[in-house]
Image 1 (spheres, helix red, strand yellow):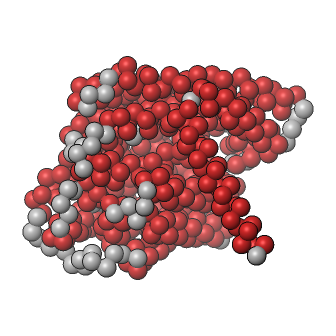
Image 2 (cartoon, rainbow, N blue to C red):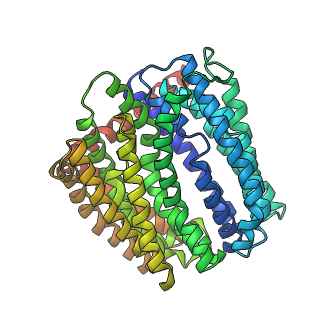
Image 3 (cartoon, rainbow, N blue to C red):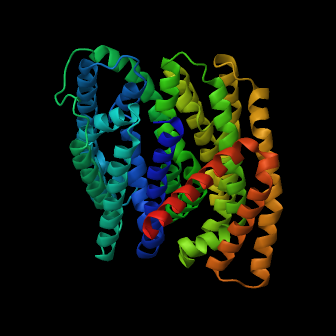
Length: 488
């Protein structure tokens, strides 16, 4: 199976997940209030910190290990059990104190439900990691998409029943249970079932370093909800969370397939002795060629996006989302870096990069949170730019990827974005002039941006053009074959 086909399977999984998540956003934003969503966001962010310890880097260890034996798989399962269960127990004990700290008693039952999930997590994590290592993305698609569908369906049903923020926690538990059941059914036959003690040292040596980076990454993601929730309250937490979700949704549409694909792909190339630096630069070029024009379009169309997807109670998120699109764009060129470093067995550099990223964001956040949500968003931009500078230094110092190489890989993306931006702005202006409904306004802006991108991409950014036209050609062939079969 070719690398491109593996990527398409990973992309199919990601995009189905995005569609399910988008449905969840549209429905739940109308069923739950900003305060209820903010309450769940605080609980989810707090448990997100604990998720860094849930498997002690077992998943990444399995993917990058050059010689994966049964004994090492058993040791990995042992480590995931020893990590997840004590963390789950600690969260159960700590949940009343966390609720008291935030002066929000509704946090307690949500934290209890989310803590209980830690007792299930080890039974699916090893299987999913082995499927990623073997690039069996078809099975991963079935498992993860089914789990997401169950999570969303349960959350919506419980929200309709009036369970408020708790519906999101119970939905997460239902989705996790479905994921574990399917992972058990679809696990590879040769995969050992029982834990083991041999090779524990090897797994822990790698896992503890990666866990430090995962903890810093989790803290980086959790910081906005935890700090805003304490200083400004649950309603503002919910508002910022939704604005950030809209900004990252565009980035995730492009990056999620790569996040699933890059780690096993980089690891496989590294094991074969290939220099993966040119591959990294090509990925950066293609990613920014898609991501930056899309983020420009999303920033321009933030008003109809919020009105259509979230509803009128979320209008304050519009200016925040526009600023956060700039922050997300600032880090797009370095999105593949964590997979690249871990695949090259440089977990130490991954730890340094993740730790500095957390300190950059936390520092700006602690200063700006006292001046309102828009200033917090501008703090995200500052943190992203500072992190980009340090990431560029690491790549130059340790991976022989110079700043000029990075700039050269991104220059066509800058030009492409600059050509799409005025088209998007013009389409948005016409939408306001003719007072189009949000759905028509959004369709107008996105259609105009997409057409302008397609018209110029072949000349301006050939690498991105190759990928998109390959997909279009394959889709056309599949449609033609489908018509021939139906005609016969």
